[in-house]
Amino acid sequence: MMALLQHCSVPLARALRPPPRTRAMAFASSSPRTNSNSQVLLGLSEKDLQQLALDLGQQGFRGKQLYHLIYKRKLREVQDFIQLPQAFRNDLEEAGWKVGRSPIFQTVTAADGTVKLLLKLEDNRLIETVGIPVEDDKGSVRLTACVSSQVGCPLRCSFCATGKGGFSRNLRKHEIVEQVLAIEEVFKRRVTNVVFMGMGEPMLNLKAVLEAHQCLNKDIQIGQRMMTISTVGVPNTIKKLASHKLQSTLAVSLHAPNQKLRETIVPSAKSYPLDALMKDCSEYLRETSRRVSFEYALLAGINDRVDHAVELAELLHEWGPGYHVNLIPFNPIEGSEYRRPYRKTVQAFADALESSKITVSVRQTRGLDANAACGQLRNNFQKTPLVTDSDNQESQLPNEDLAVAC
Image (tube, rainbow, N blue to C red):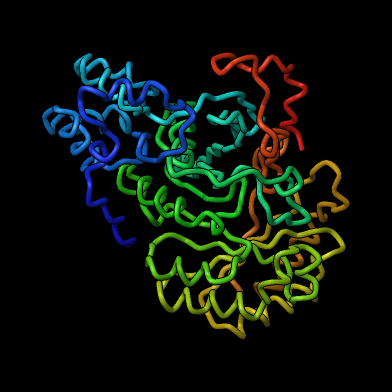
């Protein structure tokens, strides 16, 4: 289990709060678009919220009420906390505190029930998050939230739409957590699984990802084993992740059985040789006792031959047991030269892995017609902020200019 984040030596509100007589004046000139994590309620633990209540002259139980309103009721604005005294709500706002929820800018629903949400962040950039409902044979529904960790992605994998749209910044802890709450609101049911497989490379924003992971586990009550953290491979980060001994799955985007081919598909592989990546995955398994899942996007005529499967099996056996391969037939994106392989090609690749004693699964494509499938997330405003008429008015751009399609 991940070690608990250390609390500051100075209580949260007290660190921000000037003397009572000057507090309102001190915050009057501060920008509402602050980037200070300490001014966002979402992401704080129940203990933190109790301390905040005490620092603002309230009794500790008001912090428990705050916790319930944020994580159970999922309220978006401080003034919506009508169970709290008006004076407390005013004090929170005067001290610069806000919930930290972003409006849903657009919703796109696929025929299979998958929903893609575009959330408009404070800086008017848009991020995408996807809700994927799956009904099992017994009729129970599993709801997976595919969350983003960055606005865009700097790694520019050749088959992925997100990297083609450019990179702006890392997401903060609450901006990751709020994606799950938004999915729950739309589906009107609890999210059961979370995969860090949306926009961005989670390992390039590891601190915020780990903080969000803890909040989702402790405060949203999603089990660690129900969460997956994905990476294309960033040097030294898998070791850091292993040190937290999470019970979540690590999914590594491999996409090729050898270094030369991988460099053509994943440009960042040039700085992280395949042998080094596999060594870190082997050590991760040994450190955490959690198997590593390898994601493999099948690109027609590029990496989908049976001999590629045989070479992949040899690579995995070389580095030890306990690995799983998740095959992902390429999902088409605009401007890409890649093609989706035929179903029989996918099956032949899977059969070759299974005959080599490698556990394999083929990912079911979801949300394809909403451009919400794996590798399809992209929008025009991940690099350049959305233009609005004012801070309090939505963009007047027509829907066709939103470029949710890829």
